[in-house]
Length: 250
Length: 173
Image (cartoon, rainbow over all chains, first blue to last red; front, side):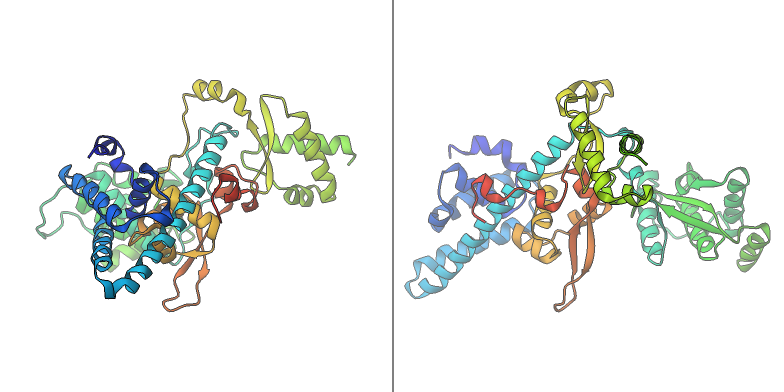
């Protein structure tokens, strides 16, 4: 029981069941190869129970490990299951030893990162993303855009009831608005186009933008996957093309 | 181009760049022998060794970086803390990829004892720290993950060989 006080602070720090096991082993200064399954099962279950009491959101992985441990403990008590038990124990020990290496490797990386972060390059104040090369939307563009769109929706926090109703907008309106946007400028962020607008407008704009990209009227550029999309005028950008697109929806 | 001019040119180009530049890149751009560019870089690195700005070997190239000795002041001046932060889980995942690449998502999950690492992988892909480098020739053809050059830059590594041996940490490989 004495170890619970300390665990409360560390509890959220486990990266998974192996991590929890390893920390328990270290805490009790045990050798991985010499663990007692029965003892470690009890300790593990207690911490898990404590986590549940604290109403932590516990991933299923932890329970899978708990049941594996309990199964092993049960097998260890049945003489004819001895061989199966030894096999499982060996596997668990192997996993723990592998995992121990990983934590050491992660520590190395953390140290490297820490050392690197004490040195600054020119223009280091720029964002992480802006340093990466722009990525022109390719075949998987629709997928990327769909994710982007989901992000936009989240950002706009558009809260509308789930009733399907006739939209207040038309494709004509939205496409014209996008064109109006480009009258004054050469590039725009998708977010700017839909800024302050409701969900339905975002949906219309998004599908319009997809259509316009497909027709080479606009070009979509991203600095990375799921990043904000930047729209540029495409090869076929013209008012004639606009009217052609609009006429499809009339 | 004589050596003195070459050294100055290399210095100027490196100074003006915000990413590491390789000997190869500079040699082919300046149309001089790689060994000469390397020599110039080594001389510069030596010149800058005890300065506020150092020439550091990173990601297979060289880059001017402020000295870690004056880190606190530079960071405070720009009111800037660490640029990137990683959760332990994502650092662990990155460590697995760094040390065992190429590796599949399933192999990573097994090593970490969790069911899925897809969310973390997506995050690392998004940050350009890892990339998909082909498919493994087994059932389902799962993607193989590798670290990127940007990973080396972020972690201040010159190459993957720079990752320390686990033995140095007293862990058996």
